[in-house]
Image (tube, rainbow, N blue to C red):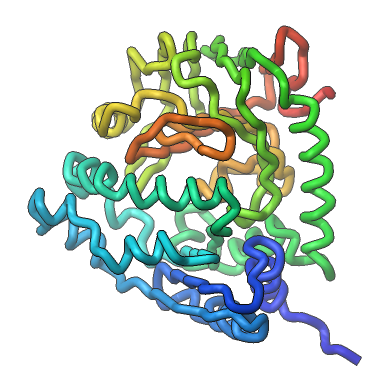
Length: 370
């Protein structure tokens, strides 16, 4: 009789067998944000070996990112080392596990230098997204519970660990089966939305339209993010018109902007305000030519994620929310906007909110009605 699988074994199975579909002969990069996620990295590493693939572990050291932004000159900020570039061009599967010691380590970093670095690494993101769109690469981002993440979420480590287990359906005997079920329901939704031309969102301080004509809606059910639970597309680049207000905190690389209001004309942000972190918001909007355009519009569907935790991997999946990303779009949806920025900003849609597709009501007060 088989022993009961541990939570970590189930977590590893999802990342290896379900999310990235590792097979014999694959080159698999396992990137660990820190040594804190060692237990999960080991389970993933063992399973990749069992599948006959070739695992390569990359583990970061706390503090290097801050030192790089602090001490690098312009030439160094723009440099992409050839080994990393080769990885993006050659890797078959990419599994990234977040486990920060400090989620605020970049909060006081030079925003202009960070913007220059993001612009320089844009080509790597473009390579990865284009290869993924062609089916040449599978990638997934997941998190491991740490004290820093728990503190940001205002939870104890035990409570935060339970939160991750619950949000990922790791409490079930067969979480992969559950994610497949979620995938089928979301495929039904995107099937109804594909072919639509105009998306109209109404809510608090919000009345905005996007053209989604010719763009593909994508179901996210654990294949690129874990946990997951959203459907998204990239709107036509010059189509967004109106205003939108985001009541949830917007966190990017340890920096925060709160209660963001944006006005868009012909796809571009022409006015932006925030009650907190407005200078940071404006610096990100001015990162490059594409950073004032919308790269993604998405609807969160994970009802097990109910509250903001300060971790975008979870927060953008909140059931009853939407999020809009400024910057880079997704080639798999037909998106063409390129930028070093991809900043997901979240809006609560549970009250006095509606979404229309081609003037038909499809979503109201946090729930689909189709």
